[in-house]
Length: 210
Image (cartoon, rainbow, N blue to C red; front, side, top):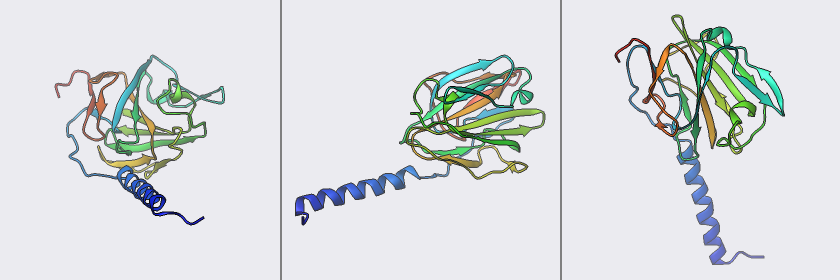
């Protein structure tokens, strides 16, 4: 059946809207990176969904009801905070390094693709785990796939050096990024707060007056 003018116009508007959204979603704007000593920056644009503290041991991840231990406890012997940042489709989805340092650990874990805003998604979805070392300090970034965002992409490799605020990867469409912070830092954020990658200060080392 030949498409009439009304339907052609609707089709054209739909295609143009999708193209514009795709361009908008994949935007990667330059931004001023916050500078300072003994600070940890947000690795993602988004809203804080949860803040959990682990006194010891490894944070747990799950797939299909099975528990998997992510071997990161050696990097956080005195415990760690895990901060989940929900990235909506309207947020910039480029991830940035929360600290400067050497990439000492990268691991990909297969998993499910549940909506990134659901409780517990940090335990079951597919993700990339990155640990960055600066001196004797370790900070982790976890890219977590969502219902639409089924691809977590990293541009860095183990053994490389990254600068604070440097682009390290991207998650496509709605997703979640988790930040792992050692316990000897004071958190400067709370649940519900909006963060910006490379700009927002998430934590400051205890005893510092930054």
